Amino acid sequence: MKIIQVRLPDSMVKDINRALKKSHYTTKSDLIRDAIRRLLIRKTLSIPGEESITTKKGSLPKRTIAEFDYIH
Image 1 (cartoon, one colour):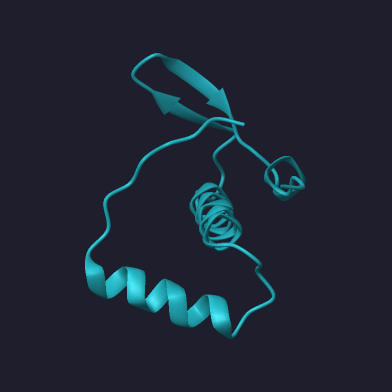
Image 2 (cartoon, one colour; image 1 turned 30 degrees about the vertical axis):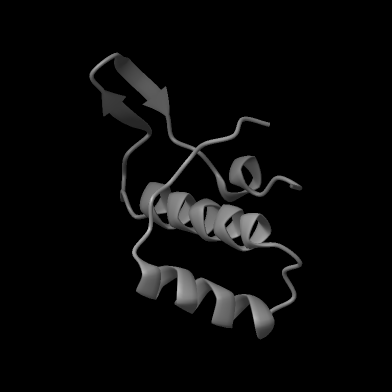
């Protein structure tokens, strides 16, 4: 697993801390990783009729929920 660094406003960090206390997540990393996974699923699945996603480097196959639903 790769480590990335993200800068967040103080208010967002406070919101994350509040959400962490009210959730089943044990770490901020778990919460943020799941939020990103859910965003990727929603964005990918919101392209009706698309079989692939075009990028500057070519075409990527459209992903399914199962492909993003990994254990972390």
